[in-house]
Image (cartoon, rainbow, N blue to C red; front, side, top):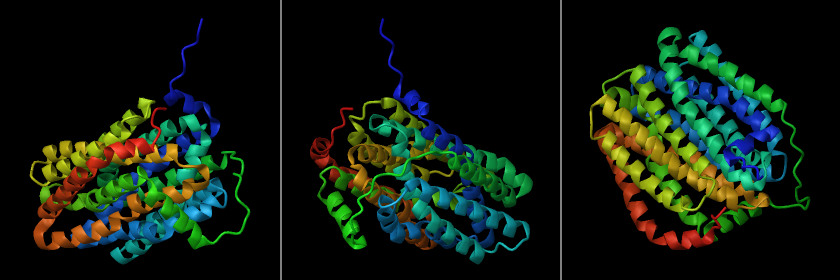
Length: 411
């Protein structure tokens, strides 16, 4: 009598380090999104300016552009777990600083900007380290599933966190959101201390920092599959991802709502993203992910155009969920494909450029489309963004055959 094979989605949790990581990530990710809603709403309340919203978003994202490639090289030479643990404790310090300054009525827009820059610098290292830690908590055959479930939990926090914030902020103010993340980040830091990950084998030969970065760029640029995927991700990250940070402006100026409307829009986006990541994780077989990435890019562009074409909040909430599903289908498909294909010796460096694109490139979009919105309004600004993504998907789709041939997606 044969025993039925365990689902990969269940198998990953039999590995202690992965289980600990996910248990610790839950409260931290949820409270992080509560803090994000609080930061966005506070920035809007202090300024009522789309340009300031874009600037705050850029303060969080720009450090990724400059630091992630160096962080990737550094992590490929050292212990990703130790770097992630250190970064997580620094995020706890950042959350505590937000809570304390808010409680004492000291948190003006300039200080909020400075603290956001600090968080962005720390996140540049923590995100690159996380991309290296998660795949090394499970066997190689489970990497795609582990990455997708990690994303699913993170995306679930995108609707749980804002939904909780919708009750916390009206009751305890923005301080309540900041204080909650102080606790959540502390819990994650303590749980990560319990992980036991052996030091990875590293090449001890002296290497030039810029040569390592150039080697990873050459690898990405010459890869028939990774290059177009990263172009698609860059287009979506610049044009569409900043909309997540502009939702406070959408809530009030487009849908004539308040912090509760903002929380529902953000939560809906998180619901869609979570469902998308869960679907990818449960596939088990990663064939077809290239096509899913194209569909994600096109549908997220269409959802964006739909959001700026209506003034009805509940229609906007539905389209926000579609946007979250589509955009996350694009990003998680790309991450799962690349993480499953890239060698361990190149993983942090290659994924650092994924981080640059996904987390850093939106800074340009936030500044450009936020500034453009000052003149033409959020509607026309993001109608243009959606159209650019539709054109990009159409132009690159003819390369789908060569992209499929560049990856072994049969497992």
